[in-house]
Amino acid sequence: MSPFYLARGASKLVRRITSETSVELKILSDKWRLLLAGLIFQYIHGLAAHGVHYLHRPGPTLQDLGFMILPELGKERGYISETLFTFIFLTFVLWTFHPFILQTKRFYTVLIWRRVLAFLCASQFLRIITFYATQLPGPNYHCREGSPLARLPPPQNAAEVFLINFPKGVIYGCGDLIFSSHMIFTLVFVITYQKYGSIRFCKMLAWCIAVAQSLLIISSRKHYSVDVVVAWYTVNLVVFFVDKKLTELPDRSVGSTSVLPVSTKDKDTKLKEENTRLLNGNSMDSADRVRNYHDEMAIILLNYLAYYLN
Image (cartoon, rainbow, N blue to C red; front, side):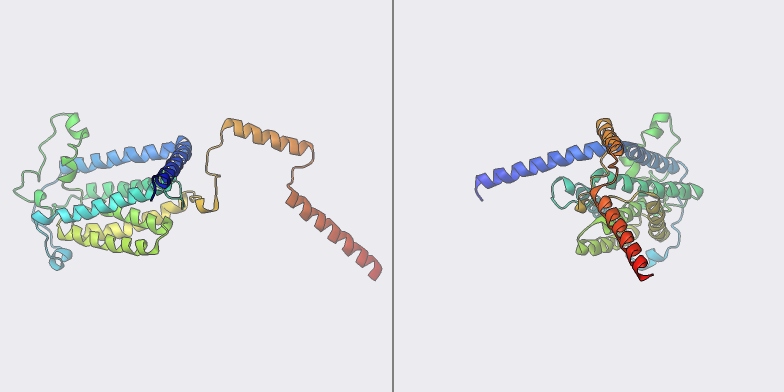
């Protein structure tokens, strides 16, 4: 391929990214509140998970059907579950930003993330309630009796609590079991792609990966089976009910631009045009006038027929 075509393609890509960024920033300026609230709640969820670690008391691992059926990966292979989750997370994030590059656009990135954060926050709120209601002895290796990380000493100051010892406090947390946070993210991402994605094979693959993630979480002993099972039906129910309360995303494939915020100048212009049409008696569009004309002519013809028949 010649340098001319490469430069031309790069120029088109830059223009597309610039144009899409301008559109998304306009939407963000109008829809930022729920996005900000969702991001803040991610910190609140992390803070709650860190707080319950202070209440955790290690003990014997509970009897679990999944532990009996699935072989234990072992401490040295626990990274397999986290690697798959990282792949799910990154691929979903990249997919939500594909409208900046590809011409086939079905949604706005800002709007899809408002929806995703709403699903995540509702599910995480229920999760916080359940793991604070009852603290189970953690099945993970660092949560078992004898591990120095199984119990946290009382905090010495507020900063120790509110900074949540990131990222070590997140990776080596204990007590936040029912239900699995990894499965919340996985299922929300898969359900979202199921609805707004366009490749059927990828949809089927996503569900298979979600099942594999569930089995790996249990095999790596990060959660009990009940944590995964509860996540499967709770997240699906949360998405079902929350989705009905949210405004449906506009389909960009039909060229919808109604979602874009209208400036004050545009509003004033539209108002003046509407007033002018009303003053001139032209409030209806041409299609409405044609339909009304045909209706009037049909009534006149029916009256003539009725007169001659009588």
